[in-house]
Structure formats: structure tokens, C-alpha cells
Image (tube, rainbow, N blue to C red; front, side):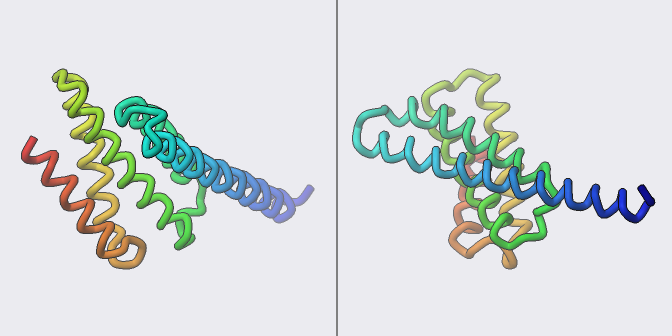
Amino acid sequence: MTSSTQAYSGELRDTAITSINIQKAFQHRSNIDAIEARVRSGELSEINGARPCLKECTVGIDLLKAGSALGSREVLDVLSQLRLRRAGYLNTIMKEDSSHTVILAASTQQFEDSTAVIDLAPAHSTPEMVRCARHNRMFVVDY
């Protein structure tokens, strides 16, 4: 196998892995929507919905960041959405569990997620997303 063939094979493998990661991340976003529907229906309490949603967001974010697909507008949009949602779930968890360890970890994560969303504006974050991210950052600073 020549080096150009190996390079092409590696690119195909990377593209396939990225595609799989994107599909898995989108599935995690769908799982979040299903959990949120259960919260809205009253089947789950807000805190019992926030914890699994937080995990789904984190896994989805990690999958999207793992691939080289971050140049895709759709992927960056979903990444920003997941970061904002994660910040919201962290707000809910901090209201329920105000221990120092939880507040410190959640506040740090919220600030990082909000900053990432703001940094992507205006190309990949809508004005509403940026407003929400700024609000989340101020929530952390005021906490």
C-alpha cells in the first residue's frame, strides 16, 4: 500500500467515524427531547429530568467535539444548542443541590459552555442563543 493510499484510507476512516459521531450526537439530542416531554407531562420532576438530560448533553457534546466535523454549520449549531441546554440543566441541578462541590463544578462548566456559544457568534449562534449564553454567564458570576 502506498503512502497516498494509506492517507486516503485514513481520511475515509476519519470521515466515517465523524459521521457516526454526528448521528450518535443527534440521537442524544432526540433523547433529551423525549426526557423533556416526560418532564412537561409531569411524568418526571424537573430535577429528575435535568440529571439524565445533563448526561445526554455531555455525551453529545463530547461526540461532536471528538470529530473533525466542527467545520459544519449544522454540527456547530447543534453543539451550541447542546451547550445552552447543558447550562440550563446545570441551573436546575444547582438550585436543587447547593453543595460547594456541585456549585463549583456546575458554575465552571456553565461559564465555559456560555463562552463557547458567544465565541461562535454570529456565524453559528443566533442572537437568541447569545442572549441566553450571556444570561447564563451572568447567572454564574452573580451566584
